[in-house]
Every structure is written in structure tokens, then in C-alpha cells.
Amino acid sequence: MMARKSLVPILFVGLGFLAYAQDKPQISREPAQYTSPASGADMFSTYCSVCHGPKGKGNGPAASALKKQPADLTQLSKKNGNKYPEFKVAGFIKGDYVLASHGSRDMPIWGQIFRQMDGDLLATARIRNLTEYVATLQDK
Image (tube, rainbow, N blue to C red; front, side, top):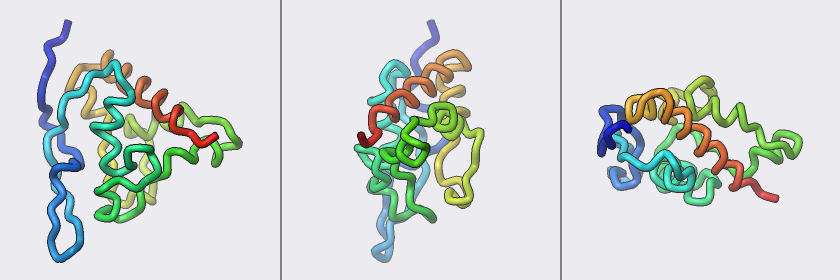
């Protein structure tokens, strides 16, 4: 079994690392904290909610510091003919797609970060579990 790591050298947007200068939030990038790959909810809370918000609505505490508003993840199914775009979501998490709306890609490329944390096999599990968790956030 792979040894558990507490930090990786890749950086991410961190809730506890927002600095306020001239009333405009600034984002600093810090090492990603290790969270179990088994829980999509825990990973979302640790890695995604700072920008997307705890319920995935795109209103996290770092959202106002980004060039573009983070996606409202609760509307993905609705915007895709009421079908959750599982492969597309997984692709964004992995880093396969870069949206113009992300500008310089404020969203970390989690696939690379996850591979550095755990290697390819667990990175795949992380992406799958996180993708499945985002599916649970969809508005009905």
C-alpha cells in the first residue's frame, strides 16, 4: 500500500490562504492537503469548495478573487439536457479541458496533483469519486 503523504509540491487555491489587500481578495497558492481518495465529499470540501462553494453553486470564499466566476456545479445536468455530463466533468477535473472562462486556468489541474499524491491508480479513483460526488449536487 502506498504511504500516505500530508503535502504535495503542487499548489492550489486555499480557503485559509486568502489575503485581503485593498478590499479585493488575493489568492495565494499553497500545497494541497492530503484527503482520502475514498470520499468524494471530503475531497470536494478540501479541494473544490473554496471556489465552487460548499454546495457547488460557484460562490466559494475565493470566487470573487478569480478572473471568472466559478461554475455553478449544481446546474450541470440542467445545462446538458437533464443528463449529468460525467465524462466531461471528469475531464475538467483531470485537466483535459481548458475553458476560456477559466482565463489562465485558475482551476488547478487536479489530475496532475492527484497523480503526484498517490500515483496513477489512486488518482483515477480520486477523479471518479469526485465526479460521482459532483453528480449528487445536481438540482432536481
